[in-house]
Image (cartoon, rainbow, N blue to C red; front, side, top):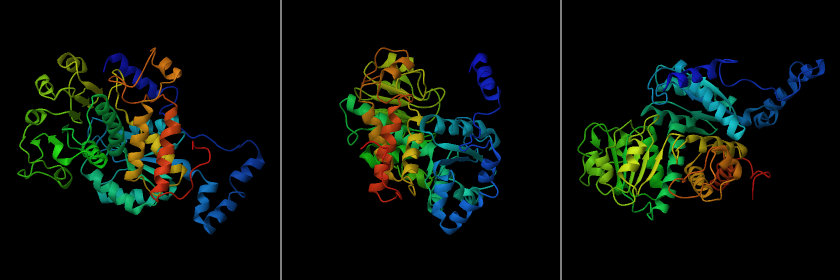
Length: 414
């Protein structure tokens, strides 16, 4: 990061008011009569109604449009375990994105917890305040245990975005890239470099969508995940592949897809050259990808390249997913975000990329043309159609899978 960008980032967070989120009133509070309704004595009436029927909390409070963005600060971006307090700018940023892109109110909560049980207990005790919970920046493998426990204990959607948001956007882009390259998911040989929360969630979702486990090669610091290794946890062991390759280079021979969720400059040009014709490379490490984009494009002219960065085509960005997934879940008061809802989000996102790009999006990116193809496999975050399409698909899936408590909203597209 340059000195200028560092200063701009710090100034953005400090001035004119520290932080990125605040409280906005939704009711007038200008007269004595307003105050009598907002607080004593008027507030007693909704209290009585909620005590009579807890479902009335959705009528008389903001619970139904409120998401908690919660972390313990053990895996902050690519910076590691810096503690809950240091994670607050990231959690505020997530809350900003919820509001900016989907009109969802969100508040950040940073939990000082000595272990997973303490974290789970804390979140469970405050869950009734919210309509949904977005878990963030929690290290693996604890994140799997925490999310699973909270889904079982809470009657509202609990969603670890580092896992599922990444997986949904990655899967949508990958399916489109495979289509463009004339390949299909069922037969694709996929190498995943990285075996953390995002990588495992991506592989799980790709399997749900049709990928064959015998075609998946997950690679961590030790090499390919295989049964002779004694260092595998339960989550990595789901992706054991004993077909022969033991190293990244061996696995890359003839691979159709490389998915990087690891670190900078870990994919060599030699490994890229070993891939099958018309390869797909998702180098998603941020801010520095697994291979420099200019180097990758100079090495192969037949590839589709995606990164996590906004200054290259095909950005894999979670903001394409989580605000709209929660919008749909909240609007039908879903009890959870299940596999059917995730797959619906994938399909909606990938189909939107095939539609003509609105003029306002072209103007925002200062280009004359964007069209489905090698440099446009996912919609742009500023595409307002995301707010119409993804929540609608997620809401329908929630209803069809039996986790919704409200009917399909009348203001949604049919």
